[in-house]
Figure: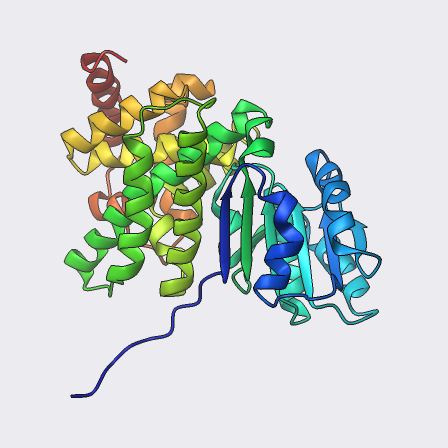
Amino acid sequence: MPLLARTVHTPLAIEVRRGAVAELGTILTDRRISAGGDVAVVVGPGLGAKVAELVRPQLGAAADVFPVAGGTLDAAQELGAKLRQRSYDAVVGIGGGKTLDTAKWAASRYGVPMVSVATSLAHDGLASPVASLEHEGGHGSYGVQIPIAVVVDLEFVASCPDGQTRGGIGDAVSNLSACADWELAHAVRGEPVDGLALALARTGAEALLHHPGDLADDGLLGTLAEALILGGIAMSVCGSSRPCSGGCHEISHALDALHPGRAGHGEQVGLGALFCTWLRGEPDRFAAMAACLARHRLPIRPADLSLTDTEFAAAVAHAPRTRPDRFTVLEHLDLDPAQLAGQVADYGDALHALGH
């Protein structure tokens, strides 16, 4: 009987715990990523430089350290030019999402493995095959190689601003809505779905949804890190952002276009996921998601983002234009302005009935 299987690209090593950074050199050696510490260390502002100083003794004189502002295509191209000047075993990105995306793009562009050392848990970019970078025309998402190793030291994550961690919770929980949108597209339009990608994205989000801990709890932080990593692997498995991006992200993109700077990505996609869950008519899931977001002080109402119901309804109406190729509950219902206004009002009433 023939054995049929597929190759799944995942990191060689995933370390989520306190003290993980102190063993970075051992991880690189044991996983045969770099035996002599001949790596390019890319650090961002904030904790990145502090972590780099801690790991430098482990790597030795062969390592080069490159500070980056991060987050832009120009910065990624400048970093890439520096990587071309000599041969490296790997690129070690240390910092938040912008720094890691910059390092991922440059490493992929020049064929160097990338190690992700995350100092915050603001979104799923720490382990995803996507780099989100700003350019003259706005934001662009670029396909990159998934990191060869992911290190999350909870000691550094715990010292990050709470707002960043809350954003990660919103991003991870929104996977539940994105997966539901993907299954809806399969049921209505016959769009293929990947069961493994669904399972990975949903499992991490479910664990986070029901976790009783708060932002000071290592258990919650570890569960959040694992949920974000599983989301990144889910995207690698299916070759797209489908398991982690649905109507929730369309609403966030619309808010960025119509009301830029009101909130972070994770806050917006969390609210978008909750509203899309309401539109799909899933009362139990809606109640559980609303309780989770409210418990962690994430936005659940338009007013939490300083938006009126009318402004939010207009953003939802605009949302499908941000991803014309994607089918979600927003495209499926295709509500007119009056219907959207009614749904937003009913959504607020439902939250009030739940005590929020």
